Length: 577
Image 1 (cartoon, rainbow, N blue to C red):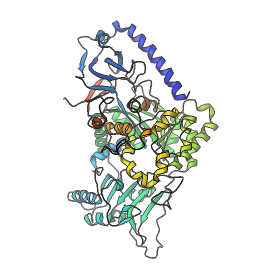
Image 2: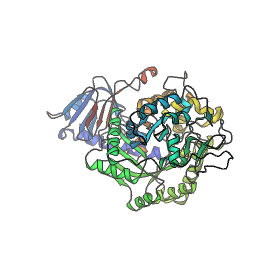
Image 3: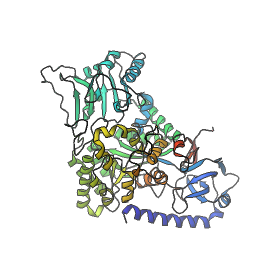
Image 4: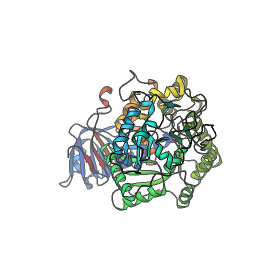
């Protein structure tokens, strides 16, 4: 039995005892809210569906049949009739970037652009209202998702010339959807000192852990991969406290609209920690944030090693994990592979963080009680990280009882490494919607054999005995959990293709997909005892959908809408109001 399954069993027994105790005490308890009148999925193995839920303040008081639930009702109890809708535990975004979500609402959103010309047009429109010299920034383009490619390309990417023509007086930097590459115009490169021509090939741009794409004459094309992005981004004016607060508020609002009650924030610096603490002090922490310390700031890590983990009493802001960025993305050909890219045979991707630092951080994490969460998309990155984790576990065996180390994305695995997740009790945090968006072109990067044997291996990992933490990696993908849920169970694009889905044997069942967004996501943050299921004593966080996501026909699943979000026993979003 894996550690995960052992902990699940103990948690279930504990909840049963709490449940029985609560029932015996029911005449002395009164509910502040009574929810009934719809389909309620609990994700609690002792009682998977119930008729009603009684809530007292921020906790679940009772979950069961309506007649028993009504015993907790008083004149002051708020009655919430679901009117046939479906309620689940509050959905948990298992890997995203909270401030990135907020800023995606403020900057150019290029998520739905379908061509290079569409990007050019969006920038040209913004230029009309921008002051000369003002930076124009945005994110979301992805060349592999375009309907067509421009005539001039280098290594599968567009060049800056059309963009530069429409923005001669404004520096422009547009982040790739993956966040692992960016696209700059001539003005931005001029500011960065990167415009010298190299007709003789003498001018090169070497960046450790990154790449500046150049044309045949040695001139930068405008594409900056991985760490090379800092050549441009270091010149972009810093965000202001005012824009940070606005982005935070927009991110909270977006979470509420999408039924997200908790958010695993994948890598935050000290400035963001200070912002979150301020917003919490002001009573504006409208989502439970489980934050990972950004791993590139070793001083920050050392400070927190001394301070220790932070788990507050109201479970609104938790810091007990570290995020390491260890390779790039498939879309930008930055994912670190064991064998070269099929569509770029001289290229293996990038090791964006030294593996020695991964080992050091894993050991320090075990010493000081911090979970380590390492970004890995390519099969070599996944293997190298598993190797470093294993070294750390062996050297600190007295500290490995409940480490819950994670690999974020775990997108492409060598078949030999799939069982190692369960063997090492490492949790894969995998965003199912990435398969939906990437699979049509990912086969060009990896070839059919590697795709079929090791890409997006959800069912293989689940069957090996590990949970999967689901999510969207917002703003890489929209935060909408319905899309990721659909991808989990259909293995199709959001256009419903192909018939039967890609590699259908790796589909999740609907129950598995629901767990991956609730109880298993809570487990991935050491929080399965306080959230993730509708169980007595847990936090009163719920998501209400207009359709039964477990039983609605697959071809109607994407039509599902979030109609209500409840956090701490209070309705924070309701389409009917």
